[in-house]
Image (cartoon, rainbow, N blue to C red; front, side):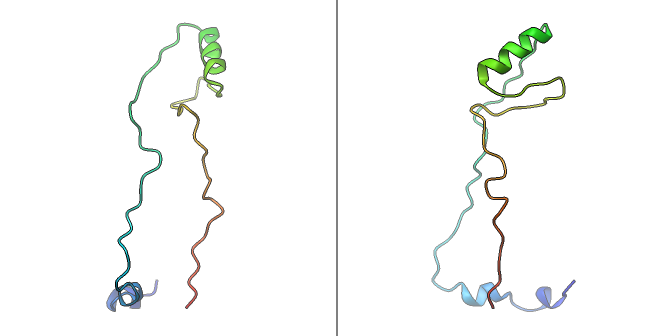
Length: 81
C-alpha cells in the first residue's frame, strides 16, 4: 500500500477548488419492506408469475418493479494524471 496517499494532502483536495458539491443518491433505497408467506408451492409460483420475477425457496427478497442490477458494472475509474 502506498503510505504517501495518507501522509500528504490528497491530490483531489488541491484540484477541487470552486467545484460544486456532489452528493451520491442511493438509487435502491426502499420505500417499504413487506414479508409475504405462501401456504403452498403453487401459491409461490402464482405470485412469481404475477410480479413477473423468479421466486424460489431460496429467494430472500425481490424488488418490485424489478431493478436492473449491475448497470454500472462496466464503469471504471481512470486517473489521467
